[in-house]
Length: 536
Image 1 (cartoon, rainbow, N blue to C red):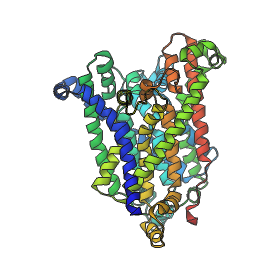
Image 2: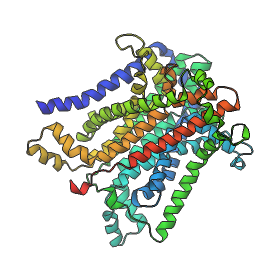
Image 3: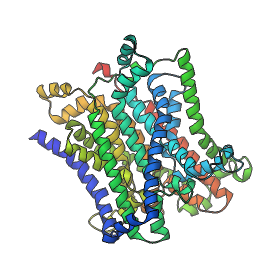
Image 4: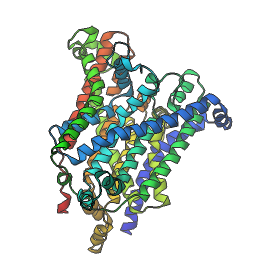
């Protein structure tokens, strides 16, 4: 009886949370905007079909490029110990949380006439958009694949080398199949982010290359055609649902039960040519990710072209408070508080869902996996607008409380928890659970004392992603944040919409503060010591 109740609670809580805070708001939008003729009109329009095709094409290209750039860094982080490793991991994570409008502005500064990369002639178009997508999503590959790779026993590959296999063949036939679940997890996350790209596509792509997300915004704000906007959102969700179903099925088929080892046992000091490899990968990745960040930091210190701290000093002025209705430092405290609440919610709900998905592979759990990933494939603007419609009246009147913000952030963060924790849970030898059950441990205790210690590292990585998602979330927050409860991204956006070099400088100053804050959070996560798996 207790076991049945435990199983029901593990599945029921995530599904109820998803139904209330995702399905209900989405249903409110479709109920108001979707009409029978809208979908047919959208599919019959040649221009809209081009938008759909380009959205799919650029998402696939962005995913492939991100894997190509991120895998070398994931390998170096997983297999080597080197000076500054924690700082490097923090640097990789920082771009992931930055508001898209700030990063797009940084790329425009890099690529504009007179900028460091003006010779590429990429000021606006597909190329800078793809580059920005890779910039944002390298962290997904490094953290998801690198975190799992660091727990793989390297002796398997070494045994293949001893038997005569080349380094490439040993990787292809031994390591790659073991990495397949984490690779698919990273690819699915990157694809979702690039498929639903809004800020980057809006600011960096030329008008002839709009994504579905940009077109939804244009149809809603510029053309006031909610029917077509809702139809495009429906097409977007169906496409994401199909891709996620295929990804989940492929990940399930490639799951391999194996004994994971502590990261401290797999990482080693580079020697000889390995030092060149590590230095080259770290240097190239740092240059690629650090360039735009350096532009932001330098511009925040050069309001009006003169080096000074005027932008930072202005954040404490009465003019800044009147612009935001509160002090910029209050916006900082809001972001931290919302991130803490959203992370806790996402870890609890996502952890329960991961336990269900990993325990019984099959059609039901695969469907649940896909459903939990749907928020990543939905427009952030749609989520925010849906929250306003659904929670503006009883029985859940949350629009007047600040709790609505971390709830929206948690909806977006839960898929990260599921995608990171499920591969780790599937790698646990089921005989460990069976032994604990035979000895009389109830299901809850088996989870706490067998599963949780083994997947603790995965939960730490997931927590880092949840904090990052909450700190940088912009689209949904723009709809649901009250004037007196802005977050850092909202504050940045408000400053960027005002004329004057000082206002732009304050926006970039807050973006620089956000970068520093994120680095501190990630470094703190890196210092968490995970129990040695060899002692379990």
